Length: 235
Image (cartoon, rainbow, N blue to C red; front, side):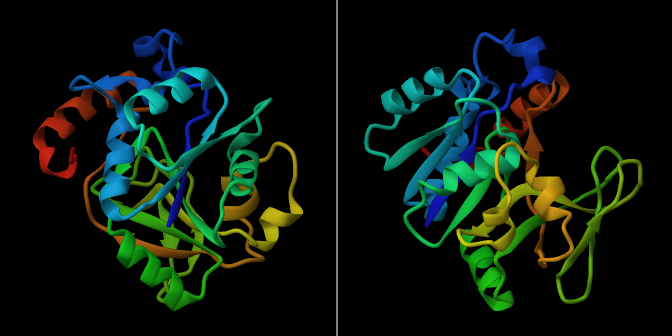
């Protein structure tokens, strides 16, 4: 299985930590760039090849991966200009050798089973599946509305309270997804594909450790979570 890691964002909300001197995925937690945790965890899950979708500070990510993962099977998908999440994924898909790929945000961590997710997607014959993780309070997220057949109906606007499921930023996407083939240039994956009701999206409900490093507060919290859950971050 191949994985696309989205690592091209500007990371403006984390500039209080990075000073925009380096990409947020290279922000260090416990002496190691956050991106390294994602690579190692996905490798442990069974990912054999990586496609890094890069743009902002791209050369720093290219150099870091080359220096720290010399035996990793990888390539880079370089955006000459920002393409949005959808455009970045579509461009990265041109580097995928198989007929589908795992798509993962490089600024968040989700504890999940790749085998279970692949089996789920196969059982639904889905061209696009998503991992939705349960959180104690969905206030700062868009809660997912999932029907009894595991079909994603929509994401509610932020502001709802209580326990619920949210988008973890992990997708299993077919290379020939019809909407991906119809769209071009800069576009939002979340708006143009996830929210498009013409092609069904299936959501696997998941319980596990989830966190991101999008803001300085999130980043500080992530340090504690990595320390407390060291068994997940294999060498």
